[in-house]
Image (cartoon, rainbow, N blue to C red; front, side, top):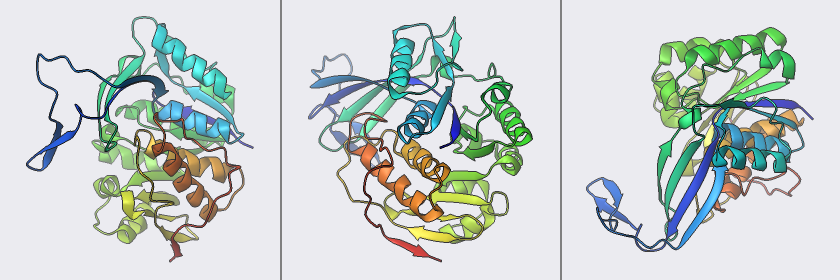
Length: 320
């Protein structure tokens, strides 16, 4: 098995779940939670305290798969931070590289979830996960990981560059799942891709990096920068290529979505967890899709994460 550092955010997710007051209401092309009135008191059916964030979700995937998982992120010295550490300890994730910020609270999300439709709205106070400039790339010298899995650092391109260059220097491979803020700095993002071994984006994100409309042209153009590229397209599946093989794939299963939080993290980290365990490119894509499907059937961003030992069935996949 591999040694994998997850670089990213840590959040406490507080779910407010209801079956009627949070029903989405359409206003033109938009939807709102139409029955929550200003100044009113709303009775909620259920409250659930979970943990999440891209760095946390991916680290849990790696650990459940049997890898040596290390989380590198910021939290505060508060009850939410304690919940994060307890969860990681329970999951067998190395927490010795966590940074405790004394004047910051741990990032927290309030998730309003309609239990009938699975639709949600997320209110986030990022707190300690708002900035990442305090991260030291020298931690990679200490950890000596086989892989660095990086999620969004809220557009902190300097910190990403420091870590990617250090990873390249010490022979650590990099998988990158950029976020909205990174995609706002396309020129800098493209400059970072020379250090990336696997890039995971969705279709709209891919179109912000390179010109293109259809998945195949987006893939071919991104392959000019990164050898292995995965582009997801929601219920349409996606496309992936590693310089040797190209697959167009569908979804693993059509399941009722209970909570879509963490689905993207489950896909990306699921792919790397399987690949780093020596599985084939094709089988890693199948596991990624299965992991994402399993997560959306549970409440919480990582409750449904698989271990890699589950029997998997074939899914729609065509080699191009």
